[in-house]
Image (tube, rainbow, N blue to C red; front, side):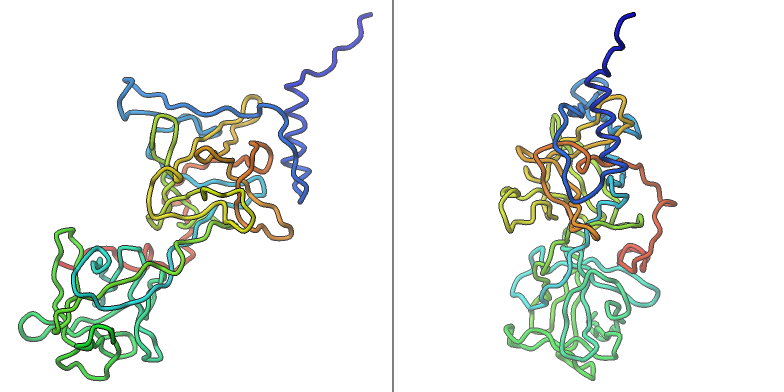
Length: 345
């Protein structure tokens, strides 16, 4: 009788990968076990058009752009926090940083900067700052008076006041007088500028943080992304905040945050999806430009974030999940859920 045949290499790879994913998720990384995945390619009909689909593993071939969530092998979701913080100041001329989107919430309005942060009235009357949250301190009443000027009153009853000296910026005042009058004008972009009676424009600085790449254990807005075509083989991954998932150019260096958020969709914001080969049921890896694969770091008992790895294996595999509105829990109080989102005309 002929001897029984040994399992094929492909079967052995599959068994080892399944073991790593479901029984061996610990701080010890598994080495790469041969070619477990291959780059996904766009299929366009007709060729050369934007009518393209991309194989993303378990959900199959999807037409781009598409809204997705990514669930790691640890059961967590890829999550990116919004921009936060920054300074409010006065400027001589209105550029993009001096333009604000006005968001209506009942009888009040919020002022949203180009960075996605909101003008915030400090409750202790020490001035103004910027926040990613849209709560009570980000809502203002507009009291219109003569000549189309408006007084802007915060949640603490104080008015936004502009000094004639540009370096002194804006403060809070208990009464709405001359220095508390603002002219709100529509810019060519459709946003609005806030000009003081002294001719200076209210501006927002770059946030203190663009956002952090981290883990979450429930599916909300921060865990949803728009995947869109960026080149012949690559995609961009846009967050719910209008930022992009990016890989640092020196992501392998010690002390560098390898995975980060970015305001622009350029070369380091492009990713190539790799789809696991059969018979593994449809996992996906994301490879940065000329760099490694997005890796869900596993510093137990909590997960530190996401790094870059030189392999597409157990801790790099994620499940792409098509997201609909009913899938999002809206747990967080943010601009996407607190206001109507309509522009003030």
